[in-house]
Image 1: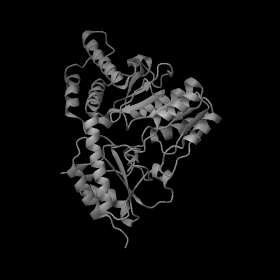
Image 2: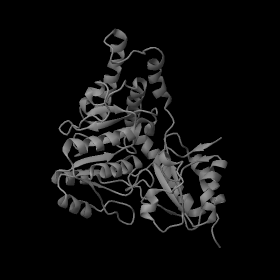
Image 3: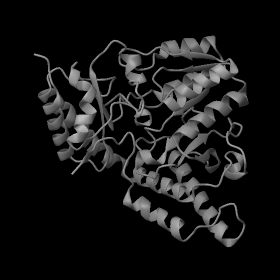
Image 4: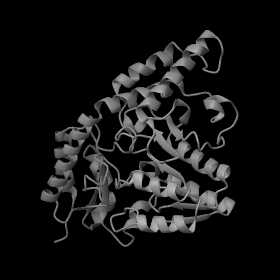
Length: 379
């Protein structure tokens, strides 16, 4: 039996989510843009889902725009935000997800916009003093900083960044793909103008997500060709995906406290066992600090060894599914840009274990045992 410890890449679909989706796969098949009864029934389901998500996040239904996932949401907010507000300077960090990093590089090159990178400390956290200095030098900039890093798990003080952006008139976008469904977001109070989410990160279906666009900071459409999503995103909606997304988020909020407690115990256990069984093991970023990192992610730093290049492959052979970085670029031949930015000269190995609500203590015990057997520590 295989053990799945790559939940930051994607999570298994909750059976209750699948049950909520089924009628819209088989029976309620109308096009939500149609005015007849078949279409109206499906339209009502979409709007009910939008209302539920808005209630959970404390925003208005009109501020939720459904997308194909986090990458589309990030691209839409960044590209359209720059165009709408005539931004001349972008402030970001070198460890953003490629959906942000690559998009900003392209936009900066195409539009001759200045791209400034905020300094990170030795653990990979944003230097708030440097961020404020950049905002002072570049008023009315666009700031894009992720709420939690998908590889090392570092959490951003998103409230503090929002306050700084508000103080200096900056447009604030945050990739919240790793935190929506795992942390509670009060968008009515948080000073952020746009966030991104993907259902498959919290036991919903793949291929659907949403962006939150604050009503007083609206942007121009990114995708054209129809009046769907309040004229903000052309194309027929992914109806059963949207229904599944709302159900998954509802379950996540209902059970969040219990799941957080359960998963934190698994992470604590893995940290302790790894320290006991693998001499010289450390942790990348701040992933072993439960107060400053995702409770769902642990990025393990293994002692330098020729065996490290094959570690993920060998773990896979042992029935353990984990990753070495961002799953969205798992086919790339280059290493992690996040670890490269934080540890440019390091030759240590990296394994990202990420936990979900279906993981057990036995999963952790077996994974640590297998990893300890595979690690070759120099004499």
